Amino acid sequence: MGRGNKMNIWKVSLKATSDFHTAGKSSGSTIDYLKNSEDMPYIPATHIKGVMRTEAERIIRTLKDVNCWVTGDPDQKEVSEENKRKIRSCRDLSDETCDVCRIFGTPNDDNKYTEGKIRVTDFVYTEGNKSTSARMHVSIDRDMLSNTGGGLYRTFAVPSGTVFSGYFIIRNLSDDDNKLLWGALHSMCHYGLGGERSRGMGSFEVAGIKEIKYEQFCTEVDL
Image 1: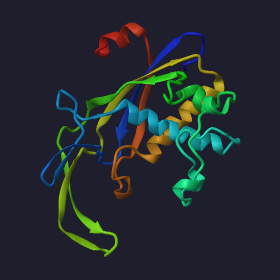
Image 2 (image 1 turned 90 degrees about the vertical axis):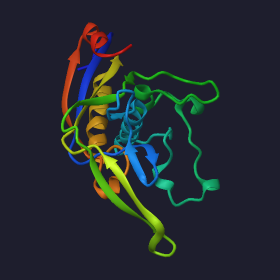
Image 3 (image 1 turned 45 degrees about the horizontal axis):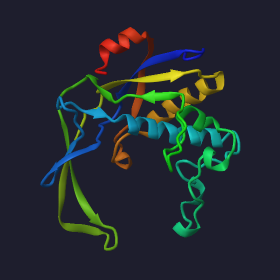
């Protein structure tokens, strides 16, 4: 999929294999999940692309040395802020574009921006149980290792089994680009989306990938 000197459009469906929550509006001690203008749950394009990029970096660093650190240096988590390696892009390094930057682009810093080979749309609800899952939580004071006064709160979540669909608009992927993008997509699902992943939320699986025509894309998306 996605090879050749033309634009290709993938319709991608992701199925939640656990409850899913991305913080939306708060009311008192209740935190709702993120909803669009039609009051339906969705996953922002920036979140999808950001997690995919992080996973692509993780994959590529197991295969080769990469000088570009767009999402930060995962090996220096314990280093003080002043001593951490600064985030650098291929553009800043005057280096050949790395595999990740070639696909996802470089950041828009100091009016410097290189467009990647992929654009992502928001992923919207397409099927599944429309009921809401609620979870109660207690805020913990990590210094005292005890619950905080008035720390009880509730989050609403999208139930397991819900399917979200969105689109990847891609162009001119090489075989290696295609493999990395495919791996990053599946790795993203394994890593999880949204918040409260440490509580077992946000796991997904790829439910379907279909290449569609531009005309079909225009009828399905509000451009």
